[in-house]
Length: 222
Image (cartoon, rainbow, N blue to C red):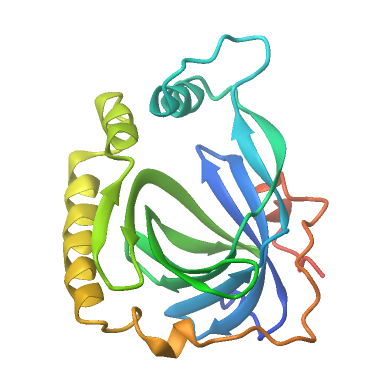
């Protein structure tokens, strides 16, 4: 079997959310570290990416969670252009239902952490793939954590889009991470909050083939 693709620091990576074989979102990111079991990716403020939205010919529900669930059930979402608003370093352990974002503002001030709960990522061709499951955990710079978007998760679970077993796994990981954050244990420590990107790295740019899962062929994006 072919070994999964690994990236060197500074290489561009296409990160896709994929739902039932179709790209939900696409982000260009820069590799920081890739140990196989641990991946760190950089996405600076100002990065252009593609996000899902309800189709213009279908009235969208006012509730955000309902809008997301409706798009996923119908598989009729469209893509819109977005610009990333803050500097984020994604810390991605393999096989778990979460990714930890280390967040800074455009001037470099640390804003805290954001834990995104999701389907464990996989390496598919020349891409990284996962799927957001709505639930999040906000961690302030002092280490206090609060759950976020629980109503959105409830919409997904009520429609059978996320299983009860997955919810239990995410909750358990979140409780453990909350305790680690209060103790300022990794990844909620100065090792990452004091990290800086290489000034020679170019801004990440979205691959023209962003809508093809795995880029359609597994060939290198470069």
